[in-house]
Length: 227
Length: 326
Image 1 (cartoon, rainbow over the protein chains, first blue to last red):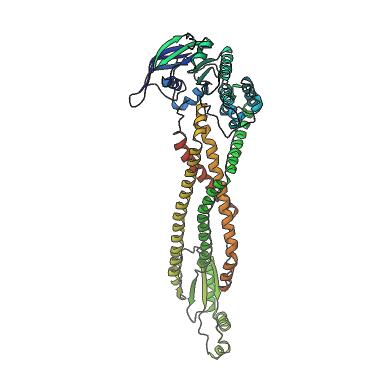
Image 2 (cartoon, rainbow over the protein chains, first blue to last red; image 1 turned 90 degrees about the vertical axis):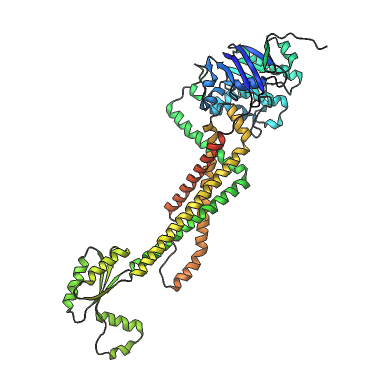
């Protein structure tokens, strides 16, 4: 479903963020994207969500080349891709309900249908009791889960997460990953960028490892006990 | 419909909704967004009030100037009514010839009204007004001529003059008189004032446009983060624009209303002063306030300016904001 074909991305000044990356992510597959900071994880996700365009190579979703997507079509592509951000990117002066409802409002949902879907999404991440709260009154982990609820509320077929466990303690991290697993089990393709290698190895999913813009590993990651 | 995922129904369109219901929802959504924008203004009362006050003042000036011109025209039109032609009849013309001229003039298509003042009437009037009274009785003969006052249908200076030419060639008319220089001057001044008012109004209205555009630009900048998030979850520019356009419309409505109130208060304040002046001139001039259609016109112009100002600003600035990444 998602395919990278010899994709490179370099920024003005000569910095090469991605160097000839190729991989495929099948429908209903879950994979991790790891690597140190600056290895190009975020850049790769930005190419999928059309925040950046590749310098060379092709990014395809369902065999449609993203470079053929016109600027005016970008919003419609983003509706098909749920994105979870490391720094949550919630609207701080709106309630949890309004934040989660935003993608639905944009797509023209109203009334009962919207309320039903928002409640379903918040229920999945276990925040149904915080529906009227402002994000600022929630903990970091809860804010992250509001972000997840917003990403999945319109049931996108592809889910991207950028360091979703970046600010969470190990237990919360595990819970968050379980949420992604649950979505994956109902057929959503999931790509999670994280540098939490221990967690990745324990989860036993395909892992793409980036190092200085190159793909150095594609497959299961061997878990090494810390010495 | 999704671009990338064929068969993935997206949005509310996925549900089977009747056309009528969708039509109603469309307008309902607009009303909801309009009210939401109003709420947004309400939440920042001091900033909103300042903007509205600036708009109100900027709109008050053109509105006042418009009223000034309107009242000037009222005065000058009462003057042009006085643009009558006086025909002085030769001495010793038999009364029946004078009468037949009056009848001919009354049938003339260019003439609105003919008033005949005989020499006896003129004498009586003169006696009354001049204060010579009985002294005039000592005159042997009445020195005043018969007078025919003609009001032309077309009171414009040129038409009146050509009528004057025609009437002065009548055989029994000694001479005809029309104070035409005075009339041309008045008309010239009024039309100059009108043009000056139009230019000033144009300048002030473009100021309103710029003020609204700048205010909307600032509020877009304030909401940069929010706009980025909306773009990231798939909002189109049109969707993001709408609340800002409604804000512009509300600014227009409130600015227009404020301008109307200020103008009304100004008229109320000036009313007594003006009636004092007009009483001194024994004129029946009364100050004309804004009519209902002018009020609606003012509001429409204000709303249009608000919408245009915010549209110009929104077009430039919302597409310029692009999310920089997860």
